[in-house]
Amino acid sequence: QNNVLKAEKSRASTDWFVKAKYGVMFHWTSETMPLKGKQKSYQEAVRDFNVPAFVKMVEKTGAGYVFFTAMHVDPTFPAPLKEWESVFPGMTTERDLIGEISDALAKKKIKLALYLASGSMGKTIVEPKGKKLNEKEYSDRVATLFEAIGNRYGDKVVGFWIDNWLGVDRWYPTFDYERYFNAMKTGNPNRIVGLNSNIEVSVTPWQEYWAGEAGGSPRAT
Image (cartoon, rainbow, N blue to C red):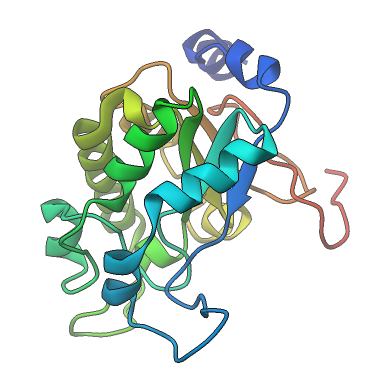
C-alpha cells in the first residue's frame, strides 16, 4: 500500500494528455516497407526520412501529440546515441531523427512521445548472441539507456509507451519499477510513462497511464 501511495505521489500531471483529446501513433520500424521499390536498410530509411512531409501530414489530422517508434523488433535507435551504440553496435544512425521530428512538431504545437519495445531492449546482439540477461543486467541496461535518452532530449520527449510489459513482468518478477520510472523521467520530470500490458492487468502503479491496447483475452486478476 505504501508503494502505491508513493507511486501515485510521484506521477506527473496528465492534464495536457487529456486536453489534447487524441494523438497518432506511427509504427515505423526497421521492418517498414516503402510503397514502391525495394526495402531500404534502417540507416538508409532514417537518412531519407522526409520530416517536413511527415509533420505536414500529422498537422492535417489535428492530433495534439505523436507516438513515434524508436525501436521495435530490432534494437535500433534513430539517432547518434553513444550509450545505445555501445550496447547495440551498428543499430544507431548518424542523423538525429528524433530531435528533428520533435523540433518540427513543436513549431506546430504538437508534442512528441516515443514507443519502445521492452523485450528488444534485452537482446544480446554481440557474442554470446541470444543470451538472456539476468534481472540485474536487464535493469542496469534499461536504466542506462533511458537516462541517456532523457539527457539528450529533455522536454523534447514528453512521454514513453513501453510495449510488451507482461513479458518483462514474468521474466523478472522482482523488477525495480521505481528505479525504471525515475530513469524514464531523466531530463524531464513531467514526462509521462505507460507500460503496455494490453487489456490485461496493469503490472505496476509506477506509471501515469495505462496503454490498454486491445487484443487477446483479458485477465481478471
